[in-house]
Image (cartoon, rainbow, N blue to C red; front, side, top):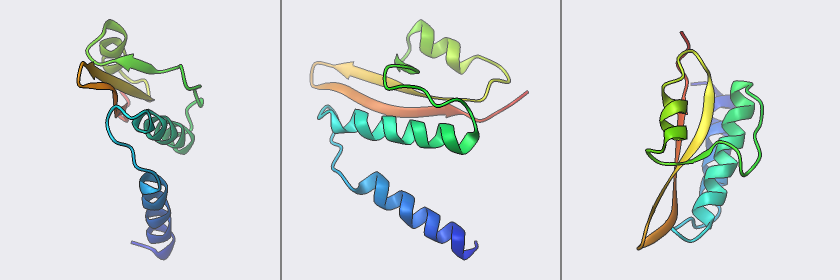
Amino acid sequence: MGKESVVADASALRRYTANAHYAGSGFDLVTALNVKNEWERALGVPVSGPQERVYDAGSYDSQKRIREPGKLAVWIDTVCDSSAMGVSLLKGSTTQS
């Protein structure tokens, strides 16, 4: 691992842990959106807005995104229940056919 990679990893770690992001607090979604946009830029896919590519986990749109063969994409699946509103999970597909 080169020095640049270690510096980039440390920088990413600081960005991801700079703010508390407890599930359901709202900061979890902010963190997920920031990571989503960072990965979109890193992978060279069009950067989406905060309302785009955010799906309810298990929904038709989420399942459709998972099953799109050969399409490089980054998205967020959200899980919501009565005890943790808006818990966000980052998901992505990096396989290409």
